[in-house]
Image 1 (cartoon, rainbow, N blue to C red):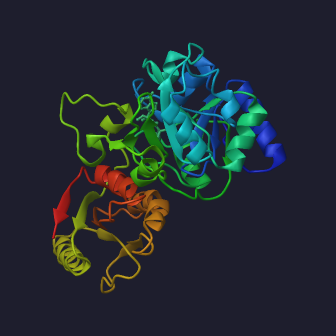
Image 2 (image 1 turned 180 degrees about the vertical axis):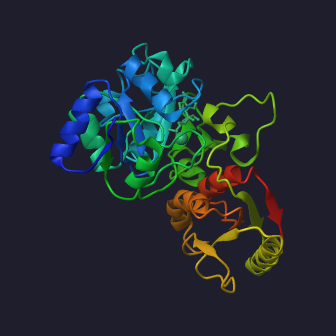
Length: 343
Ligand code: AMP
Ligand code: MG
């Protein structure tokens, strides 16, 4: 199969929408990461997503809509707290877990009784869903286990020959996947942190809880409420360690470890902030230390770059885990197998 990459335009969106209606897959931009989209109501089309990604069948997909009007047909109920969150944060980087209606194929929900729904802020994504005339199931468009794609080029690297078309809408603004929030009860539970932060949810609902697995590795037998959490994600080939503490301690510890790795014949790289001086050692930038959203937008590309450059070790500066910093630390933590050195 030839994989065409087309810049977003009305014609390209029509072409992509026709592919979705025909049961094919399309790589699509969103404000979070690139998605691998298929008609969410077509079980055969949805199965192609799992094949193209090499995704385990027990990891559910998020269903994307172009307007809140499309939602009542997809769910059994919209609890009051869910409605408040929709009003406050949609369109945007938030997925709500709701009780699913029968029209959602069980392949989408991985057999669960719930479904994740999102109204994306990306205009190209909404235009595609509206043109297709169907909700679009779309996980991140990476091969399973690789970092999520934040450019059309990343999607091409992972999906060339597997899908007919990628819509190129430029680099993703947010850069980490949506916040996944269980909104089936009165108190929203953040199952996966993202651009809509616990602080923002707290402000609207008055209460929020964060699933314990957001910042800890899973042990065998743990039951997870967000199935994606149990898979090793975002892992570069480089052995990855995070350094957390006062900036001067972090910089000193990273430089010492870097030099020891060089002496041992390894090829290390630092994921660090622009304001910090690592004395000419190899640094892949996470942007400004003052902007966690810079780190969010850059992290996945930085993890891919490690592999492209054949680095064998990655030494990462921790991010303050507040606001979107929690999402950055969750993804970085999983890339590092939660190997975090406090210095
Ligand atoms: P991805 O689109 O690749 O970021 O994956 C979507 C993630 O959303 C999954 O890995 C799950 O963790 C989460 N998710 C989707 N649907 C549900 C659901 N019904 N219940 C809980 N988590 C879900
Ligand atoms: Mg994913």
